[in-house]
Image 1 (cartoon, rainbow, N blue to C red):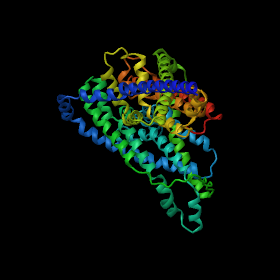
Image 2 (cartoon, rainbow, N blue to C red):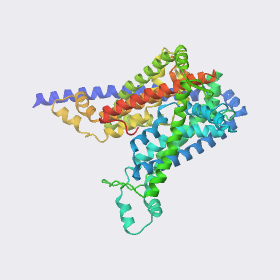
Image 3 (cartoon, rainbow, N blue to C red):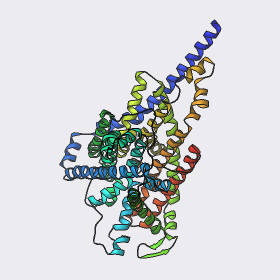
Image 4 (spheres, rainbow, N blue to C red):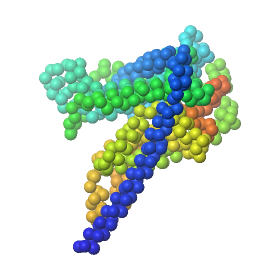
Length: 539
């Protein structure tokens, strides 16, 4: 017995030491890649920088424009996302899988592409403007809101849909038997169920719109937002002091949204077993639902179709004859090289980000000490750090280091930028895995590493593939953080859209958008097949 006890004790010590090493590694990553870079921005702020930023005549207007555009975007996106979710989850309709894919296509291209699509259709020389001889201007606040809604409403649609699918039909059935009308049933039963989610969605979309610079930079015209002002200061003028002040202002709504989301209690009543809602087959409801979905699908597809037409048209929109000239021009200007850079960044972030998300979630979900709680909170806080803030933080913190200007720093910033959501996905998934597996393996003489590889990883395989796709797709289309780091690091393909647009090479910019969409769509289909053994139905 003493021999068995000594062997058991030695294995326990080995597991404990390896666990400490993993915790130390994750803690070091969190410290040097999240906390210290964020603090470097605050340390870079100087009294002169504050005075210069506050004395700028553009700052008050930028704050006002940011609040207005973000509020309008969040409100419209929540309304569209809610009605879209209700239609897809509660109404008897055909082609739901196809419609779901169409609604989520905007998530696969950069935000700046949506603004570019609006310009190609409603700009001064846009297709619809010339065809219908319209006297409209898409530039300014209306263009910012329209472009922001196009890329943000799919997020609202996904978040609301996931909650509506969990609602139990039993109380609704009882209320129907009692003669309670549909509107009263909705506000008494469905509204409490989705109220917290609607607030979370509003805050998430508000933060996305407030911190994005792609749409307002492309279509804003004279309407300056905080993100564009920060981009002009830090990237164009290399004024990091004023840029840091604006960056701190930019992070305020993100932190406020994060805190409000944590403090807002969940008021919906949950049950262990739920009954799905029977599809509503009322003719009037179906007709309105089909009309809504048709309009929404057209709004999504038409700008993307304009990219394809523009890419292969001789002189869009006056000469629509087919040509490969613009494709070859894009390739001659480095399109293939930049595509390779983007795919390399995306693969790097997807592989190492997936591993890091799994390890971090494993450490925090299995750990009970102060270190695990600190890591969990630190990673969640990164959710409230906008990409532009993170990009400037990396410029300041890693400047003159060995990784600055290299492939590694862009891959690293992408991992940190998108880490919070994959981490939460894996953290919640591991919470459903039996926590006693490792102890049982230790008793049987099986090491923790083998238990993790042979038992836990297969159980969470689908989540790992979803995380891989999430990292890859977002790394392919991001323009916020990487705009501060590339160049001097190799430039990704997404940054060529603004470059081509500024050079009036609209057809090349359109082809870049199509390239990113095709690559992301293919990756999503492959990962979905591997995870679920079927074609993609929803993203």
